[in-house]
Amino acid sequence: MKILVVNPNISTSVTALIEAEARRTASIGTELVLRTAQRGVAYIETQFEALIAGAAIAEILAEEGPDADAVVVAAFGDPGLPGLKEILDVPVVGISEAALSTACLLGQRFAIVAISERIASWYRDCVERNGLISRLVSIRSLSSPLRGVDSVQQDFGAELVRLANAVVDDGADVVILAGAPLAGLAREVVDEIPVPVVDGISAGVAQAELLVRLSPRPARRGSAAPPSLKENSGLSEALRARLAGRSGSTAHAERG
Image (cartoon, rainbow, N blue to C red; front, top):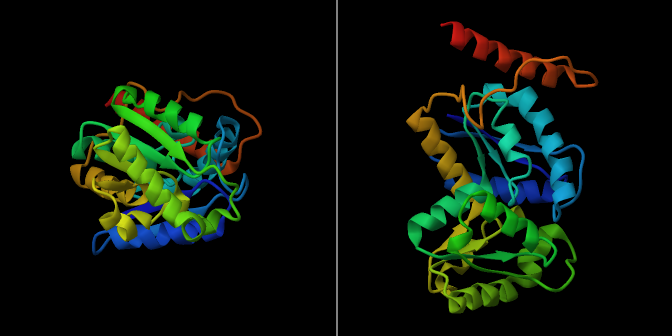
């Protein structure tokens, strides 16, 4: 099994955090391929930044996605995810949807701990897009500026644990530590929080492996169906080939 894990921001140090947690989670025999966005921002906080990230991921998926058995989009908020699902015949999993799905299996109500106040509104929109807003208890976030996106765990570990316990007091049955910069933290603080703690990276890799084993049929209708082939301009060769290739496979399937 080959899983392509894409960091949608440009921070290679965060990719290293993602890779470490992904490798701790992956089954024996699973091949992990890590990639980092070549353009964009250090970490994504807003819808506009997510829009930029989605385009950067699309380029990577167009080039390498068809060779993978599944793809993990490794940024909470799942930038560009609905569109990315349209261009590949393999499962494309966002770490938000994976974390939310996992949390729902572990408890009735969940809460999210985030790394910045600005990011919280985007995360709330993500929960709503997944149809789970009624099960969200609260989102609590760090209020201090970040020294660096790759040092959040070291700089704010105690505060993140405090926030996690605060959302438990809010009524959460499960806590999601949100964002790739927090990858691996759940394993370290599991004994300091009295409810299950979900890591988006580990949830994403595990859910991707599960979907590969289930061998779902690629979508031919519905929201993840391929885009129709139409005149285009200014796209990379990889994107043009992916659009033509998936549109072509759809036409073949319909004729068959």
